[in-house]
Length: 150
Image (cartoon, rainbow, N blue to C red):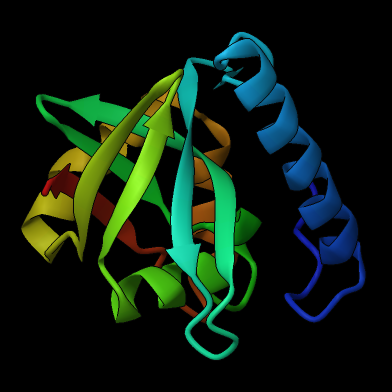
């Protein structure tokens, strides 16, 4: 797998456009289209731009863990965390869409021990995470975020 482009690359605008299309298809079909990648399921994360104040929705892979949902702030292993991660850490109470269900959640970053337990399960459902971690290792540690019922 090739190393991802730097976070400042214009390619990410194309990725964001694709994410917008994914959101529309996901909602239209209740997640039947755009709701899975490899073994991982997709949720729609609502968040608010911490600088702009604009509402945003981002499709993300997730790992179900009891009544919690676990997401990864990988951005393909680039040199910076994705914007949604910063937005979520600034305003952790939010909503996710899982299929046609909406859930209120509170986000928190997994601690080191918890991350160590969750990471192998995340790689199991989406194997590219292992590559992303290797790419990012020089510049950052990829955060694992736990979404707990609010």
